[in-house]
Image 1: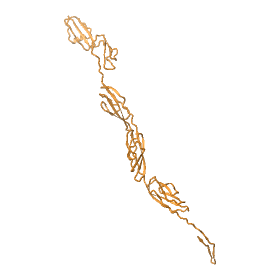
Image 2 (image 1 turned 90 degrees about the horizontal axis):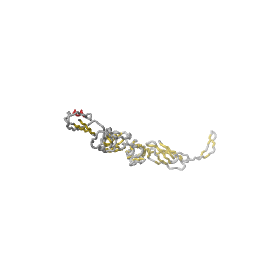
Image 3 (image 1 turned 180 degrees about the vertical axis):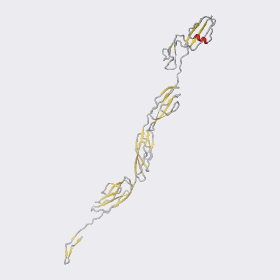
Image 4 (image 1 turned 120 degrees about the vertical axis):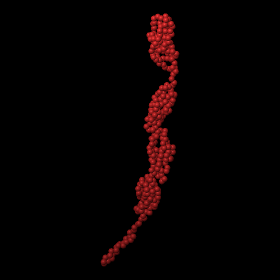
Length: 370
């Protein structure tokens, strides 16, 4: 660039010193188009770039999102926490310090799927339940422990301990989201139906189950109530009773006991026997393993099978009279109530001697009248 200075007055025209100025015009950067993701999911990371020019720097801006890394270079990573159509732009400054016009890029941010793993649930150990996820087109559960198929929306779960399951839900745009569900595993109640018991036929026994709040006995044979913990059992033959016990968590367990019904012993005491007053006899019982005689009066030991018995003079219970005729004389009797018994028989003394013999159970008494 050249210039000349001229000074002009009314009288003169003066010419000054001329000089040349050289001006360098640097180019403005022509930034290329942005390339990168045309769609992205919320919170996912996208990569965007322009053609790099040596010596240039690049300033990126992200509408509604964040530049995660690379700002200042020709390549950046970015993400968005909102869905919809958004713009990312870059402005290039070259090595001459010239700044080009911003270059923009439009893309779509898709929302995340509404992942739903279902409500928390409780089961009893050994039981199963159906998980149910929604919100997408594909599902992946973890951990896979106890699941029939971790790659479907509704696998069957049979965990052995309380487990938190996480489901990864993917929608038609390829966007992913997660949700969790807790499956509580309750132990089974510790159930006792009681110990096995022996009873005699015709007798009863009280059962006593423990371990829960609801009780169900079976079979109902011989039971007065099958829905309580302690029914009375009166079976007529040996039987096994089972009880189902349910606790406050709805978990159930069972136990059983054996009620053995024994027949009654065949008690044998021998034949009736006649003894004389003041005599004793050895009683003989059989049919069991323990014995108890009653009344105990006159017995040396009423708790053995073969005690000695001296019954003394109990009141007569059975009489038999044998009368022979003799001379009419005065009468005497060694049996205190004999006179009265004769009166009851309307007895009139005969003309001859009379012998009255009285037999009493377990005793013989002789009454003689002269």
